[in-house]
Structure formats: C-alpha cells, structure tokens
Amino acid sequence: MPRATVIDHAMTERLLDHAAGIARAAQLLREGALVAFGTETVYGLGADATDAAAVAGIFAAKRRPHFNPLICHYESAEAAFRDVVADRRARVVAAALWPGPLTLVLPRRPDCRIALLTGAGLDTQAVRVPAHATAQALCQAVGRPVAGPSANMSGQVSPTTAQHVLDGLQGRIAAVLDSGPCAVGIESTVLDLSGPTAVLLRHGGATIEAIEALIGPVARLPAPQEPLRGPGMLASHYAPSLPVRLDATSVAADEALLAFGPPLQGAGAIFQLSATGSLTEAAARLFDGLRSLDRTGLRGIAAMPIPATGLGLAIADRLGRAAAPRG
Ligand code: TXA
Ligand code: MG
Image 1 (tube, rainbow, N blue to C red):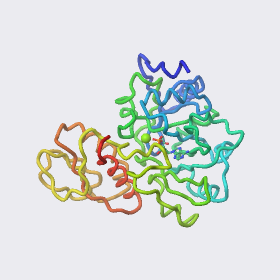
Image 2: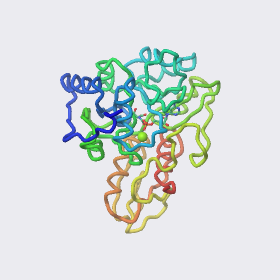
Image 3: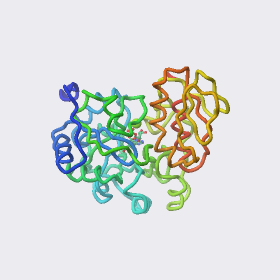
C-alpha cells in the first residue's frame, strides 16, 4: 500500500464550506486522499472507506494503533443499511436519533463495500449519519461510505475547529473542509447492536436515557481499565499532556482550573466550561478547554466536579480518560 506511507503534503488545503469546497473535498476523497471534515460532534479525518490504502493513510497520519476500528459516515440510514444488517432495534434508534451524534455497531453484510481494514478486521462495522449539513453533503457527493476517526494525532484530544485539525495534522493530510466550530463538541455515543444485548461502548452526544426510552435497558461496558471488547477504548486515549486531577474542590496557584459553575478561587489559569452549569455548553467547550489549559505550562489541570447525568456522563468519561495513568 504505497500511498499509505506518503503522508507529506507540502500544504494542507483549507476548503471553505460552500459548493466548490465540498466538491473539491469529495474529489480528493474519491482519489484516495485524506480530508478532515466537520460534523456536529468533532472533526473527522475522512477517507474513502472502500479503499483500504486510503484507510491505511488514516492510521499513518494519526499514528493511531492499527487495531482501532473506524466509524463510517453516510448521508442517510438507507445508505448505511446497505453495508450493515439493521434489525428492528437499529431501525428504531436510527429513525429517532439519526441524523445525530449516535454510532451503531452492526454486523457487516456479506456484500459490504467497506474495506476490512476500516473495521480492523472485525465482522461488525460502526456506522453513523452525522447531522451536520456539510458532512451530509460531503457523504452524498462522495457516494461511498466515508471512514472517519476524530481528526487528531492518536492520544490527543479531539478537534472541534478546523484550526485544531491543522494544529495536529498540518502537512499530513490533503485538506480540511472548514465548516466552523462543532455544535455538540463531544464524540458520538457508540452503541453495539451486533448481538442480542444492546451494549453501550462509549458515552457521547446522544444520551443513554434517550436510547433506553426507545429500546429498553442497555448494558454498560466494564470500567475502561479492564480488557475491552471494543478495541480503541484505551484508558488514556483522551490525554492532554498536563496531568489532570478530577473532582477538585480546591485549586493551587500553579494549577489550571477547568471550571464548571462558580469557579474555585486561586488558580493560575481558568477555563470556564459553563458559568451557568449547562452540560450541553460544557460538552461543546470541553476539548477547547483541555487544549487551552494544556498550553498554560502550569503544573497540572484541576477539573471541577461534573454532575453524572446525561451529557455529564460523557464529559466525566472523557475527563477520566484524560486523568488515567499514562502508559
Ligand atoms: O463523533 C464521532 O464519533 C467522531 C466523528 C468524526 O464522527 N468519530 C470518532 O471516531 O470519534 P473515533 O475513531 O475517534 O472513535 C470511534 C470509536 C472508537 O472507540 C472505536 O473503538 C469504536 O468507535 N468502534 C468503531 N468500530 C467499532 C466496532 N466495530 N466495534 C466496537 N467498537 C468500535
Ligand atoms: Mg478519537
């Protein structure tokens, strides 16, 4: 796969969110190049999912461990369900929550077009229909499933603006389609419906409450430290370079504070997730906050407690990974 090793682009094109920009992004993807694109959750690093060499390029560009299976993006549930088998549960959640921040892990169809590498060789495939109009237009213009992990170097926080993408991947990918900041700001919820029991593999933008209201009880994965069925859920996946201290009730002058609600006094720097205590606002600002506090050069990041409900679970999950011991 020679193309996979060619990751030096003199300059990453910054494409604008209009017809010509989307057409150029689609053309590049169809040619096997890597194009980052905005969704409502985070920016994805796109490749033609049917082209294993292009998909290999994703792993190379991100320096991502190869065993992490990738999500495929589609313009509609109908298009997605041409590649994977959707049972009644899948159709019910798709009808209610797509387009939106939900990924479904489903069995591959025998005639699935997606390269095996995309799913890391598993017989299941993760699929999602993003709500962002630009992402949908892009998928439609490509006419093939678009593989897309978050568009960051492996182990870094997920990007929520085109500039974040360029901070990590400038010169390593062909282009970024700039559709502005991501509205949700946290990755999609990953729900495994490939077996008889529905299993939540990752908290994210779609709440577990909303899913259980549709299909009944959903099993949780064991804590992230334990061996995992969902590869790629490494405990320290979302790691800023500064150490993170959770549930801080006081803060030192040489620490940076990730605040939620009225901030603790005395920090060397503060990033406010939500002054009013809104979990939606906090989710949208989380990765921005980790990035900017990481740049302060202080001793560490102290994170204030976040309520463990709805999107707060996803935020706590991300912070827990950020705080996990580094391997
Ligand atoms: O919001 C999102 O989901 C973003 C945007 C770009 O769509 N994408 C994203 O992709 O976060 P990524 O690759 O960073 O995370 C995908 C997650 C990983 O935890 C991976 O292990 C899991 O989905 N996953 C993918 N395919 C799977 C499969 N077949 N079985 C189990 N887990 C899978
Ligand atoms: Mg990621």
